[in-house]
Image 1: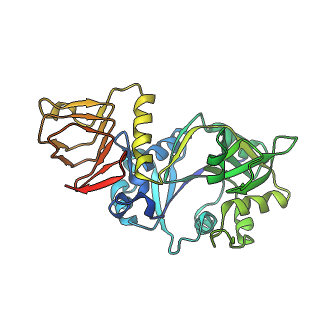
Image 2: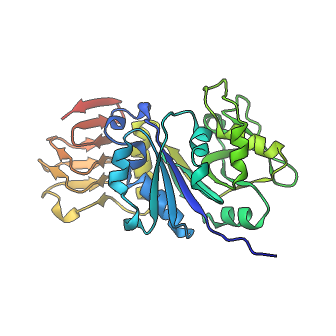
Image 3: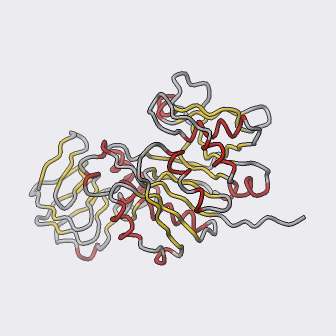
Length: 322
């Protein structure tokens, strides 16, 4: 019996605009938003690299040229990056189907606008290459039914395999939430080919494709490998995620160049990017400052996100131009 090659391709979907993330989505693709001074995409690429993945495909659309310019060919991260443009945004399954000619075996799929904190992902790889399954879903135990309603529910059978996935369920019958991180073998493409558009969002939902895969008799596994997942839907999600990651790393603050901070500036539970200038000696608390920003406030700031041309008060929901 010939042993199957464990070659795995990485795929990141990064084509969406994210209108609810305004005002940031006009200038920044959501997958490039920084978490402790590292773009979400780079966090995901590093997770892929840790699994031995060498080839990464990034599906781009809105501001795709910015993503390609920022990440280049991937050499800086030890991977080879190829870019595939999604011409029409018709759902996750539609984006994945466009990759059929670009992959020749199992692939690990990240949604590029979600920041993940995970356990070791290698069990997902093992179960697909060695466990006889056609797909593996990253899940987490979610005590809040509202969080499951915003995502998808995963229901298991007596043998532990997935029997049903339900997109945005009205009635939650499980505490297992799907997290936007998947590993599929090639059978998924045939399932997508037979996936209809849904009435809910008039899109091709990957959950519909997964259900078809299951009903075709293929086994799909669910693995509890996600510790936390934050979908970047609103500005406050970005700030909360940065502060949570700062806490997880045990840091009081994160500054790309702390030695260049102006005298008298005090950082408290905040993240400051490279090339930031403070015009006055202020205290910055629970905040995020994008690279290249100039902070002109004469008073202390708390709970804000600052970019080169805007300041968003996440607590008050107010955006101001500098």
